[in-house]
Length: 153
Image 1 (spheres, rainbow, N blue to C red):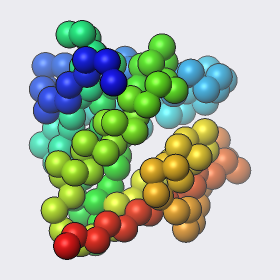
Image 2 (spheres, one colour; image 1 turned 90 degrees about the horizontal axis):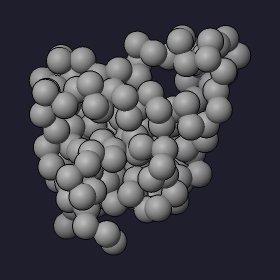
Image 3 (spheres, rainbow, N blue to C red; image 1 turned 30 degrees about the vertical axis):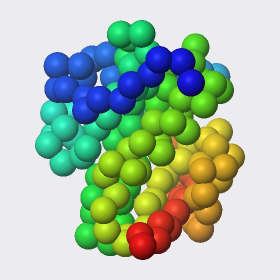
């Protein structure tokens, strides 16, 4: 699949990564006022680089996406998975998620994600199962909470 490579993201790339997450979310046509409500949750912080493992997907020297996973006591949490809008739908999300799970997940704990409703089918295709929902903004909007279990042999 093309000439993509995955590398550990660097703090110096935070602005590029944040532009990708925001543009990727906007790709789904959400109203501007909703985007504003979510802005803080969409943006990576320096602290995120300290507590999460963040990997970038590079295509021909250009960062086109990133994935962040944080290990918690009970589970691994996919906190971010974003692909630049022009590259959505070409298998890059699957490639990046698979790489990160393989690289980061070392213990027999479930992998969880609070998915955007538009991404629920994608995560389901990657073996995640919806087991709950979490209220989001604006009021009355809910996110599917999904889980995947790996068995390490």
